[in-house]
Length: 366
Image (cartoon, rainbow, N blue to C red):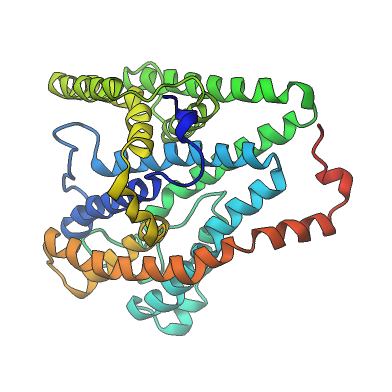
């Protein structure tokens, strides 16, 4: 059985995987936000790869797989762009409004007028909403006395990287549309080469041969997921291979951090997509709830910082429990009231774009 045999439709475990990953980020952040930035986080000491890092890798790899599938299914850069814009920015805008004009006004030590007219308030909002050129982390006078001082939403730091991956993928596809006869053959090759080259770079950096780079690691994860999709007809999903990967990971963990790092980076894709498609039955019932992962990811950090400010000296366990309750409420509201609804507007947005822009600019060569 190949990946292509199962990678059809939405009957899979990606929603469950993503919510677990988002919650893992919440759990990791609970340690420094409750106890301070020098606090060790889960798996950091034992494996050398913190639980939150694994979660973010899962996000990027899953994203690479699914957005590549979306692009190749639509074969339209305009549809691809609108799908990504509607998935990310409306919910992000609402979160920023609540953070800057609700939470920020409540917690700032400045007067309301000084806070609202402050350059850094505007900078935080604008950078957070545009993403592509980075984000800001501090709002004036907010959370200055917290154990992890000032940072309002540290989770947002990965989002500019992910947006750049989307842009890279879309630009490559659009550029190849100028040579439609070779696009179907060249695009998969470019994706695989990007994954292989960045993987070599990540391993080389681990051994000190290159400078370490978050961007390189994210690029590898994203394009590993993309490569799994373009090679889906050739990759078998085997229980033996899956168990073999787990055994090698366990052996590498016993050998030390470097061995685990290398094996983890090279085996995560297979483990992830096996779990995404092979386990079935009752586990798929989670899909009825929707996809709360994005809401959990963008709301958890400011919720946790608020809890830390309101309850000084809170324990990690209490931080996890309290912030989980508030975060999941916000994530559920975000999904049902914003994310799910605006994604239904994609067709109208695409039609409007086609009406506004000249046909020759939007036409997809065959």
